[in-house]
Amino acid sequence: MTQLETARSGKISEEMELCAAREGRDPAFIRKGVEEGTIVVLRNAVHKSITPLAVGKGLRTKINANIGTSKDRVDVALELEKIRIAEAAGADTVMDLSTGGDVAAIRKAVLRASSVPVGTVPIYQAATRMLEKKKAIVEMAPSDLFDVIEENGRDGVDFITVHCGVTRGSVGRIEAQGRVLGIVSRGGSILARWMDYNEMENPLYEHFDKLLEIAREYDMVLSLGDGLRPGCLSDATDRGQVEELIILGELTRRARDAGVQVMIEGPGHVPIGDITSNILLEKNLCNGAPFYVLGPLPTDIAPGYDHITSAIGGAIAGSAGADFLCYVTPSEHLRLPGLEDVRDGVIASKIAAHIADIAKGFPGALERDLRMAKARKSFDWDGQVTESLDPEKTARLLEKSESAQEEGCTMCGEFCAIKLGKKERKDHRP
Image (cartoon, rainbow, N blue to C red):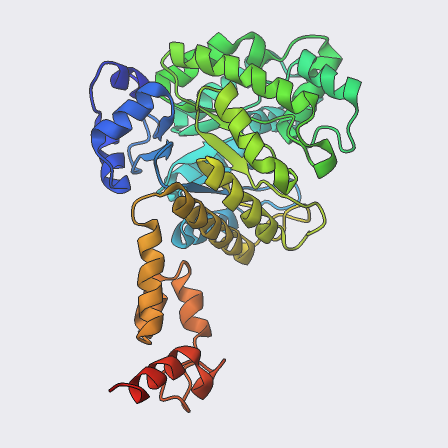
């Protein structure tokens, strides 16, 4: 049985027990969330080398780190090192988005190297296989795509992005309304071109039951992708994006009926005032399914700093109910991320996720900030390093003030407000 079927039978699986211990929740809480579809448990039935991860309502906000090759950069060792760095920085999952080199072999290497759940976008591999055969991507048969999805499940991939809501109707709405940037999702663009060339419906939508059969066999979570997400603020929350979300809500019901776990992927570029409404829209249309958001990015003009842009949007989205943040690195829109980009992206998302957890009232989140405040008051430098979201950088930047006998840093020295406040209270003690 899948995790969803197990939960419906009233039983608590080993995976639910492990997730509950990790979250500090009662196992019954996890089981109920899985039954209702507001929580998903990420672990392919054949991927036993990892600890399962629960994502959803009432749980800690999770973080994903993307890695993967491109045709211009195929360095598998580098991608595996990115996994190590991402995990060390606090990523809860990784996604292999490789489009260059032997994608199947890279995926297997990623699965071996990762100690956290792994996600993929199977259409990337299907597309690269067509190019390897010297064929156009639009010549791909539906069976080519489903064969790759089956292969991903068999290899142990825990969750897959599938752009099932990119249909002839939803793409038609975009074309009728007009967009500044059009379709910015690679998977969404591939499928839109395929439908136009073949004058056929998206096979992931038309043959959704086939997709459910594969996902159910491996208990692989379907991450219903936002193939029509806005790529700039001007395109946010348009007819195409909303039409896709309506479709994904309908497919969510069908997946749950089949015993398959589902989460929904969210918009990319959204004005800050519209982020909360986008989260509420997904929760309403998709029956509370966990929401996995890229960013969102509330401005288009910060290349080189989009990890900051994303952290701002992610904190607001998480506070409004988003469950899973996909990191954005400083190199977004510019190049494949390097090792430092990966680390910066994860840390920025950790900041956003923690802010969201405080807003959600997640047990222990605010208490950590209180411990930091107490450590600062007592000049407990080790405590400040320990409680920080990036202890390595905190320790590296710390400079204690010699003039203040280390009760203060070199920013203020003898003029440290906390030190002066203590001295003032002492001087006025009766």
